[in-house]
Amino acid sequence: MPTRTARTAWNGTLQEGSGQVELTSSKIGTYEVSFPKRAAEDADGTTSPEELIAAAHSSCYAMQFSALIGEAGGVPQALDVKADVTLGPDPAGGFKLTGITLTVRGEVDGIDADTFAKLAAEAKAGCPISKALAGVEITLDAALEQ
Image (cartoon, rainbow, N blue to C red; front, side, top):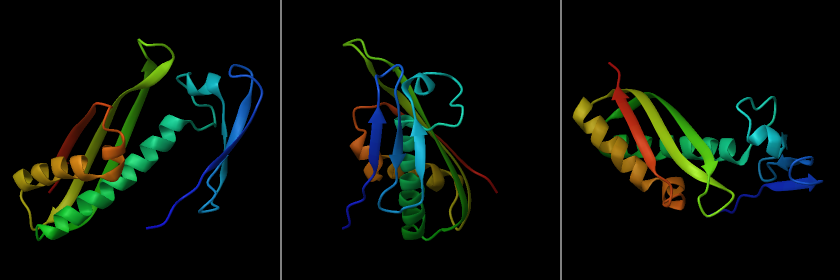
């Protein structure tokens, strides 16, 4: 299996510095990062580690869920997956991820709502990004839309 790479160039202190994160393997872009904007409600044109984790988690989950639906004999017409990753204080000091909420809405042929919910939970447990984030509470809100 391949290895994927990202690179960050950082200049300055935590509070006054900033950086650029480059998606090196795909070469699709370089994005601004800054701690003050990371900790603010409005990202104001910058990304953050949490947003990048949310992107990784939502796409990984969608792939895992699609595979499980296919294995169960269903045909996913559309899956809309959102990952909300929350940063908060760590009682031991600094910050930590305090939770992730996966929300999925799907249009799927060939399975019922109970099977959809069961497979959604299995995808949450089986997704490699979920496994990598095992120390973070991950909640799931899944609904089949017909």
